[in-house]
Image (cartoon, rainbow, N blue to C red; front, side, top):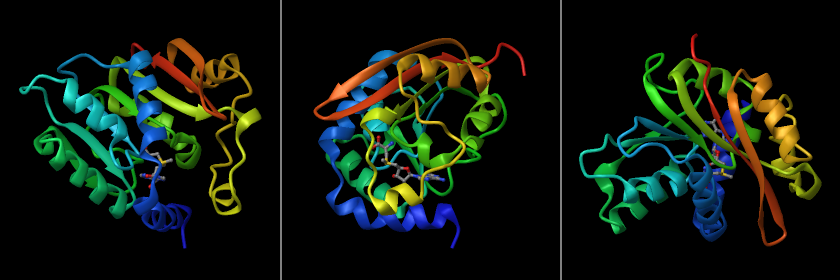
Length: 208
Ligand SMILES: C[S@@+](CC[C@H](N)C(=O)[O-])C[C@H]1O[C@@H](n2cnc3c(N)ncnc32)[C@H](O)[C@@H]1O
């Protein structure tokens, strides 16, 4: 079984008991740092049950394009669709089940890419694809667990991408974003209970 298929299976199992409160908080913190423009073309990468996509959808005007929300777990997407329906936001999100890398969009077509709590599963191929999918100078916002406070259980630990270094500080995360080709990088540590993540906001290269 591939790594991606194993992740789909794991998150399918977890969808019924997902910690929405924690991920809603993280999504809010990420959007506060890296929120896109009101009518931007946006992707929520590895969206899960849509913590980022739904917060964004609720704050956008009715004529904004739907937020593209991609996740490999069909159960997480089902949960997202149900949450959207309950919020009367069904048309505001374009849900897709599948590998989020590459994103199902043409080169240079997105104004913003957001990825909460997921890059450490996706691996380094994801930021490379975001540079492809974003228009020159487009926005990216993502989070990574702070290495000093991250204690993944056995199954999670086995499925972590080996080519994404977990940062020990906001500065480490900024260096990683710069190494991925992003610029105008801002990063900060966000504390939520006993969990700590680094939030990163940056821009895609001005030219591809
Ligand atoms: C910790 S959850 C975060 C979900 C969501 N972004 C949030 O903030 O609640 C990680 C998500 O990454 C998804 N995922 C992992 N690898 C993926 C891949 N290659 N393509 C799409 N989704 C993936 C999982 O299915 C899961 O929903």
